Amino acid sequence: RRQPTRAEILDGLRKVIAKAGKLDQATLRYYRSAPSVEQVMREFGSLYKAYDEVGYVPRLARERSLNRRTEQNVENHVADATLNALRSQGHDVRYEKHTTTFCVDNWLRFKLAVRSPWLIGGHLPYWVARWPDGFPVDFLVYGRIERAGTDLLDFHIFPRGSLVAGTYTVVYRHGQTHFGKYQRADLKSLLSIAETASLDAMQVDGMVGDSS
Image (tube, rainbow, N blue to C red; front, side, top):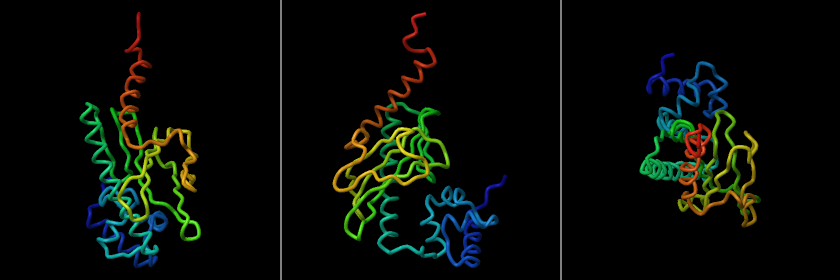
């Protein structure tokens, strides 16, 4: 199937705005003739960058819109650093920017998410994570930042099965994490996971520790 060009995607987005008066993931999925969310994100890297191209301002509170852009900028920075670190260790790594998903050595998959907090009553922050339900991953790497901040507070590295897919789960509230055993100060442990996972795969294949 032929992939639409950048110009065709932009034209499709403008037609959706003309019909629906708005532009978001649900609206794009409603119109079969519209570009898919995946096509838009693959071409532009994020929906927000596509919005800018067509001059659309999403119906979000201004602060939330700015926060999401900040989250994406920090995600890009962390993704670049992680790619470089894994490749320096000799791993074959592919990164899908539109899903923020890494594939290491053609089998280990993890998704990166950087999020600022939601607010209770406008002032009590809490952070929520959502395990992806549209594609399989082995780990969700979840970084926390303050609202409109750029400094990473910590990471949680969730293995498959630790969160319910497609459901928002509170990770951190009232100054403490709900998942202490997955909390990390940095991503050094993720690099260790990549090394250990590769070793485990070799053991499963009978390539390590096989005395026969």
